[in-house]
Amino acid sequence: MVRIAVIPGDGIGPDVTAEAKKVLQTIADCLGKKVESVDFDFGAERYLKDGTSLPAGALEHFRSEFDAIFLGALGDPRVPDMKHATDILYGIRFGLDLYANIRPVKLLDRRLTPLKNTIESDVDFVILRENTEDFYTGIGGSIKKGSADEIAVQESVSTRKGVERIIETAFSFAAKNRLQKVTMTDKGNILRFDGDLWQRTFWSAAKRYPQIQSEHLYIDALAMMILKNPGRFKVIVAGNMFGDILCDMGAELQGGLGIAPSGNINPEGICMFEPVHGSAPKYAGLNVANPMGAILSVQMMLEHLGWKEAGSCIETAVKECIREGECTRDLGGKLGTREVGNAICSRLKANMS
Image 1: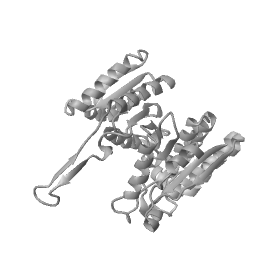
Image 2: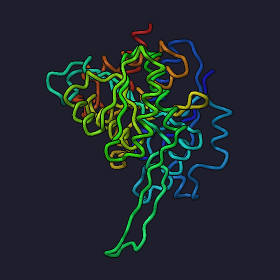
Image 3: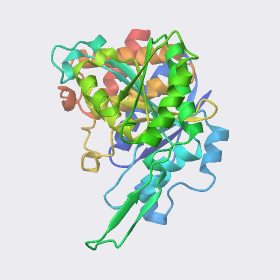
Image 4: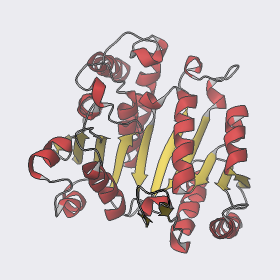
């Protein structure tokens, strides 16, 4: 029995999560496995009702009772400062020490990429983003706010421990998946102290993996190269801020945010999986959101839990739906959210019968 804690969240989160759960149950039925998903009402509705974002004891509950966490999306204009979203998302990432954000960037159909003369094999790499440090620690402040003399300070933090473990994870990921190259990116020519730590740590780790090609590129050079020649990359490892930006670039290369999955990983504990897109509140409940990013996040989750066959079957079904136009408008189709989920489930059943 696999138990999944599900946080549908806000906006289109419940819409795409419903289809992800549908696919999860379908694949379990096809494989004769048992899965249980339990919904948690963490999100804007509850926060506005009683002030609860991430309840006390929630993390321990996740650790002790569940095998993974699935998150739909967070964000609601009724909470202008997005405190509930920050409390929930960062509370889980930091509280469970999910230090590696893993983002596969894989083109499933060449028609989806904005790059001309690009085929599927040209866009197939993974970004490993450090997930708990950098500017996201929230250290900083402002003085004289609203005046002509206002000063805002935001501090970036990189620890030896944090840098070492994300770089080690990148090399071990490459070795495990037989990927021949790891590229590290920073802006060490300007951010000298941070860059010095990252570069020393990277080249030290590279010595332990002589079978893997290692390279360093400054973030501006990498951003240009990833558009010019994405096929040169296999594994990219970056800090939190640069990794965040690169993940959205990668999503566009593969067909947009609606098709981009991700995993928040700590190999020693429970992990969380979520589509990359936001909550898009204006589309909530309209049956127009693309659920494929959520469904491919289920693929990542099941592969992480050891269901390798399930993962490959889900990806195949998604590819087939895209090829046949059984997709939402952002990918050139005419189906709604629920209809896409149904189409993927139908293909899973047919392929696995």
